[in-house]
Image (cartoon, rainbow, N blue to C red; front, side, top):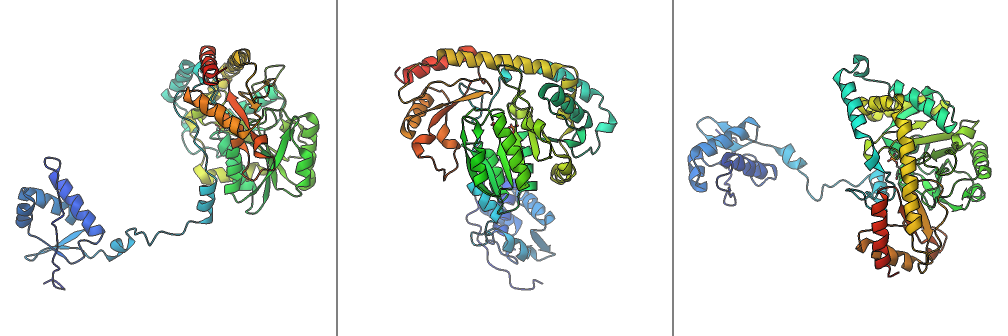
Length: 488
Ligand SMILES: Cc1ncc(COP(=O)(O)O)c(C=O)c1O
């Protein structure tokens, strides 16, 4: 006997599309109605024969749908008494309604304000920023090394590994930094990450307390600023001049927990931090008990002389966290980078990494280790540097001489992009829109500033252009298109 009188039910809205998994469709329609309460607990379902007649389907179709609902606990049968909707009070109550939407946490609100704009997808075009000449990557070599690793991986490398990353790769990074960049460190200070962005984000998670002041270059790499802001930092923009970050302005800010900088090639202005400023920055960190995050994202690209020694190579007090990435020498989607940490921080970072994801996936690390050990990496750096230089030359040679409202092309000695000042925000937007209309990508310098920056809007205007993404012919074609679009 039913505990309470069966409720009348209305199945008039149930529509099945002919010919396509009828019993599955019926199961889904009934399940939806049970979950959203239209078929309340205790309601009696029509007999299978009646429902089949009502819906104009075979009785088998209805029985199969009922069987599935029964097996999953949505309905129950009472012998000799028909089929009833189960009492699912908690499921119905838990079904989301507009009113039960939880208030966003502080972290979710911060994420709303500080999300990354996704870089353009698809094959690179002139003058995409942040992208190296990945058309030159030796994929056959990579495929061969990868196949060799996976054919017979050493069992010792297949279990849970060191959270700091593959030991062999860390040793090779140490040797590379010592020989090519003049940076001395120990494998215990190396932490493998999924690219520079994750390294920066880890620094934000571990070094920043909510409310801390964090100094960032302004204009600067907004994605780094967002990572610090989401960790609760109050961002403090510091001006950048011809010598890099203005250390006197940094000093005037008073106490900051850390400063994030791009010394080799400031992003996006392209200036190199002078030696004097490097020493002042280290001195600042020491006196304020602060940290310096050195993002050396494109330090391998230097077109006159050898690459500069990083700021971390001058650090005697263990105040600099050095961020390196393979993504600007290979290709961004590889997602492989590293942090060189002061010895005092290495263990904490490694523990944090273990909590996040235990450690990076072994395949990419092991193949990169082979790629470096066999000399391919150094060869590839030389190939990439020479390609980027020649692509830079194509842009400099073909750049129109007098563009109204545009400063002259600066000297470009490093990196993968350049920056040209423009006299006003209106002119910047006009040039960029006309370029976009003919399929040429140019970034607005005005988009790299913090929202409440002091320079007047017209002083924030400029063109930021990557020159390495495509080959010389495509650069020349883009320059022809620009001449027409800009009516030069
Ligand atoms: C200044 C700067 N740092 C870091 C990155 C990110 O590098 P990764 O792809 O290794 O996360 C970029 C990418 O454009 C960058 O411009």
